[in-house]
Every structure is written in C-alpha cells, then in structure tokens.
Length: 376
Image (cartoon, rainbow, N blue to C red; front, top):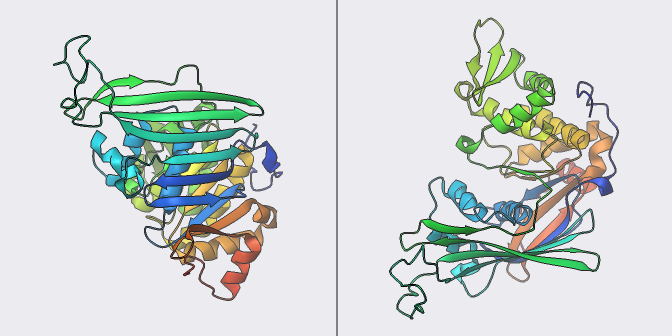
C-alpha cells in the first residue's frame, strides 16, 4: 500500500473494484416491513426521523456480511440495549414480534455475487439443552415450551452457481447457549467494522494494532492533530490507546480526554485500517463538536478511497450535512463517491429510501431544504 502521508492527494479507485454492496433489500426486520435501497457508492449516508429504520439498515448490512457468525444477532442486541441481551431478546429482530415471518436480507455486491440471509427462531431437540429427556425419547408437546434455536440460513450466488449454508445457536431453558453450529465449508472473505452510537462501546485497539503492524499508525496521528493541534504522539499499550500532548511529559489515556477525541479516533482508525472492507458508523455526530465535522468527513473520504473500502453512516445532524457539503465543494474528486438516502416510513408506501447525489445535497444546503425527513 505504501505510505499514507500524502493521502489527501490520491487517485480515485474505480468503484467497481471495491468489495462492497451495490444494493440491499430488507424484509420483516425490526420495524422495517420492506425496504429496498439501490445504487450504493463509496460513502453512503442515511438520514431519517427517530425510529425510521436507519440503524436497522446498518444492522442488516452487518448481518448479511457476518451471516456465518451465529453469535452476531445477540451481540448486536447487547450493544443496542447497552446491557446483556439474552436469547429471548432475539424476538425483537422480527417485525411486529411475529415469529412466523422470517426476517430476510438480500444484496448484490460489486463482485456480482448475490447474498441472501433469513433468520428463524424455532424448536430443535438438543440433549444439552434438555438433559431430562433420555436418549431416543421423542419430545412431546409439553417439552416444546420455548423456542430454543436461532437458525441463520444463507446462500451465496455467483453466476449460475448457488451454495446454501446454515449456522445456528441453541439455548437451554435458562437462556444460556448450549450448542453452536457453524456454517460448514463457508469462509467469509470480507471484514466489517461497526462503530455503534454508544460511545462507551467503541475501542480502537484492534484497528491501531493492525495499523502499527503495517507501519501506518502515523496516518492516524496526523489526523488527530486536525482534531487537537496539541497532540504529538499516539501509542497503543496493552490494548489501551494513549496520546502525547505538548507540555506534558507522560502519555495520557484517550478515554480520559473526553468523548470527542475518543469518537474521532475510533472513526479515523477504522477508516485507516486496510483490513476493514466495510465500515458502518451509527450516528456519526455523537460526542463531537460541530467544528470537527468537516475534517472528519475529509478524513473518511480520503482514507476510504486510499484503502478501497465502503462506508455507511447514519446521522440526525443538519450541521453534519452542511459540513459534508462544504467538504465536497472543496474536494470535487469525492462528489460522485457520495450517496445520501432519507429513510421514511410513509403512510401510503411503507418504508422508502429517497436518494440524493451531491447535486441534491448541495441544492438543499443552498436553499435550506430539509433532507432529514420526507413527510408523505
């Protein structure tokens, strides 16, 4: 890859060579009955009112890229609820809590492969989860008192070839995982980084370790100087990030420097890490002062281009959009690499995604048009 020191001057990589999504279709997932989004680009921004489904779109992208990991649904729920999420909480992934209708995600990637994932909560007899049943004994209706198994059923289609897989988790009557089945014969080639809206959930250690091994950590250090000019150094020690500040003899932990620096570092480190093919950022503005938005957008586009990754972002902030527009005006080379979607749950058409390119964003900012909600 070479050094990143001049990454603000770089060639645009053809979007067709990128490992990422062309589109996604979501059915019966959380509060979304049906939603299809087309024409993804390098950096994709989702807008919408509260409970419009923005975060659910990011979670759908994460699930379909992590479809061979049966632990992923519970991990997503745990971060969303900011506490331990039990097996029974998986029902919240089903539209209107209707377990008879499976959540489904379908996508086409830039490599022209197609993916389809469905989730199913069902009962499966397992000796580990019901040890009171003797070997060979057939479970009766009385023993089927709870749905104990999450199945992730997925397939990958390449040309005329289609491969089908299944992975699953089985829980006992106390809700503890008693059995895990992996997708035999499937190996995921993509790596996805998800930065949740909860600031406490972010930890840049994995990205910083990888960047240090690749001798690319200085890229992030230079970016941090845009956030705070006093920063002179960045180190990762025992999976803890430290920064050096002018006039202070010892390194200070990033966690002690406030939410803003921690959020900025999490995003920049994940953007700079070439190992991440896909980056998902929920509520990008969380913890940040508006004065940091423009430099952050500039870093995201530059690093995503240099590392050839695809980025998906949600935001509530009009100021964030204004700074994004200003940055794109100054960097026309990034204008065609941005898509903006307003997610709206309409009365007449259900969930819809209204797409804007740079021209739409620019016109809305110049005329003070509200893009975060389309009331229909």
